[in-house]
Structures are given as structure tokens and as C-alpha cells.
Image 1 (spheres, rainbow, N blue to C red):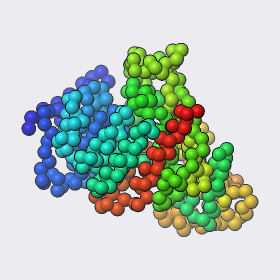
Image 2 (image 1 turned 90 degrees about the vertical axis):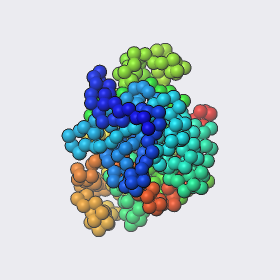
Image 3 (image 1 turned 120 degrees about the vertical axis):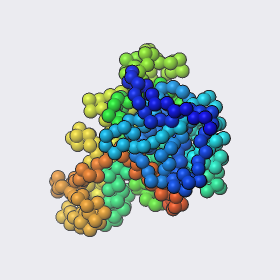
Image 4 (image 1 turned 30 degrees about the vertical axis):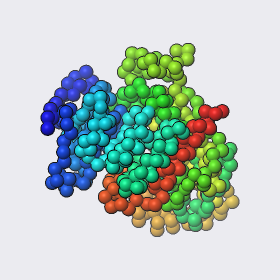
Length: 467
């Protein structure tokens, strides 16, 4: 085997030393000893999004520290390796990854031919992601994919085929739903599952839904302590996908996971009511700031109007699940003073509303509120809420408490130890994936709900475009 190792990576205009194995003509064959010690070996295909690197921000007992990367040469591969290098050389709990890179033009075919690992990690350009998912499972490989798994209604049947093939071959095809590990989302879900407190979900209407998930994102933001540089294709909806099929994946997932816990939801349980999409407009200077490019490439010219790059990054879906009306909405802006993503969530019950807000009054920090429903006796509700917090919530989440804001509203007080942040959620969801992969105990609702989730987003895109 001819492997050449390179210890120089280009970052921020300078070269720095890294512990990264680089390209060669052939992949590395796993030894029997290594395979026994580490049941999982990662193969990252086209790591064009920083989420691919965040999967490796931590080390895992079950994962081989030698990981494989198949990608074209260029700044996206360099940035991925730079992230890994920083993780390896940080002063606090450094990682010890060794990346073996294949960067020749036939890299997708080479990965499927060599198969040095057993889990394909996908987080990057979404144009071929569904194709890569299908080909990977057809080749007998497990897949751990960043959202979205599919970005068009035309490609959705390929995803269905991939799930069917994975089932036949006893493989795990799974997407990275980090938002399920945010503590306010966890507590909202748990409180909604207590009938004596929450009651039952209100049916809601299209104009006043009972389930709401709203998300605001920024094109300009910091990740792992430095400004995030986005690739130009991120602004091409044929490569990244529209917002309605991208970030909406998380929002639809939270609605299904939070309001219908442990229940299988199939397409026939869902009724799409309406969908819309709209653009965020970027100036040349703004594009330059977030990409580092002096001008947009030719493939983006079709989205330029009067000197502005118009990106269909925003979308809204209104739909019903088992008769309960829900709305998921995503919006992208260039930049705000706080430069952070924000989230709003509502679950409306007959007993109370459970609200997550992350606005200025919360200092842009996710905060969970409990508001007694109209007509509920405040004193009786407060006694039940106190009992629930003491007997149900506190044993599972020590230190979590409530603060009374008014006769009918309380704020949930969450100790700082639970506030691990978005990047740390990648370790949590990866450990969850590894548990499913090694023990085969994935809940029976997970796979069918993933299939339904992507049917909702892609069908909504079709509906929005037909308007």
C-alpha cells in the first residue's frame, strides 16, 4: 500500500502542522485486530459542511481513530481537515484522529470499491446526497447522514428505495437530528406527555396551529470559535436545497418527535394544508464576507436580480398530523448584532401551553415557559405543576426548577450544566447512533417517521413551487 502523509495544511493564509494522513493510490485494509477493537470505522464522503467535522469533535470508544475521507481536492476538503487538526491540537481534551484521504476524481467509486470502513458520513453538497445514500446501502454500508437526506420531490422515491434496501440488508440509515438533545426540547416533550398537567393537544387551525416550530438562521456566524466560511454552492438551491427542505427537516422532526412520542406516523396520517417559500437577498459584499470569494460564480447568475443574489432559503409548511394542526417555518438573514440562530416552539394543550422562546428578552438563550390554559383553575394547576416538577422532572433532571412569573405563567429554570450547546449535541446524537448500530435496538417508529418526515418536506416544496 502506498500512502503518503502530509503534515502541512493551509489555514487563514498560513501553513500549520497537522496529524493528517493524505492521499494514496489504494485504501487501507482493516486488520482483524483493529476491527475487533473498533467495531465502527468512518468513511466521510464529500465533507463540504462543517457538520461533518463536528461528528469528529469528540472521540468514541467504538470508533476507529483512523478515519477515511473521500473527496475532491479543494477548499472544502482543506477546511474539513483544518477542523480535525484543531480538534487534535486543542489544549482541552484533544482528539487523536488520523485521516486517510483519497482525493482523486473517482473518489465516490473508490470508496464503494475499497470500503475500508462500515459507516458512511454524509454532510456536504446535497445535490447527489440521495444518490450517495442509495449507492452506499446497496454496497452494504451503514449511513449516518446530515440533514437533509433529500432535497427534491423527484428524488424522494430514491430515498424510499434506500430505506427499503437498508432494511433488507440489515443496515442502519439514519439522519443527524441534533435538536432532540437540546434540554428545553427534552423538557417540553416530557411535560407534554403528562395528561394531568398538559391535558391533550388542541386540534388548532391553519391560522392558529397548536404545534409551532420556527427557526431563524444567519448566513454569517461563528463555529468552533471562528467565522464560518460557506461554499458558494450553499447558495444554489439545486445543490444545497431550499430552506423548506433543509432546516425545515429539524422543525418537522421536532413536531413529530415532541408531540407524538414513540408513535409511528405514516404519510396517510398527514394532510398538507399549505406551503410557501421566499428569498433572502444578499449583496455582493455580503456574499464576499460569508464565502471569501470576490464574486459569485457563474452557476449562481440565474439567481441574481438587479445586483442581488436571491436565495430561496425561507419556507413555511402548515399541515395536520392525526387531525392536529402544525406549522413549521424557517427564515434566513445575513447577520444580526447577536449573530446567533434563534428558535421558537409552541405546544398547545387543553391544560397549558409549553413555549420555548429565544428572543432578546431571553438574551437569545432558549427558555421554556409553562402557561396555564384559559379556564384552568390557577391554584389547582400550580399544585399539579409543583408535584410534576418534584416527582417527575427533578429525579430525571436534578436541579431543574420553576420560577413563577404570574398567576398563570412559570419559567423553567435549567442549571448551566445542561446547556451544552449545539456543537456538543453532535456527540450525543452520534452516541445514540452507535448504540442503535451496535445493539440493533432502534425504536420501531424511527425509520417510518424519517420516511414520512422527508415526504412532508419534499411534498411541501412541490406545493410551494406550484403556487
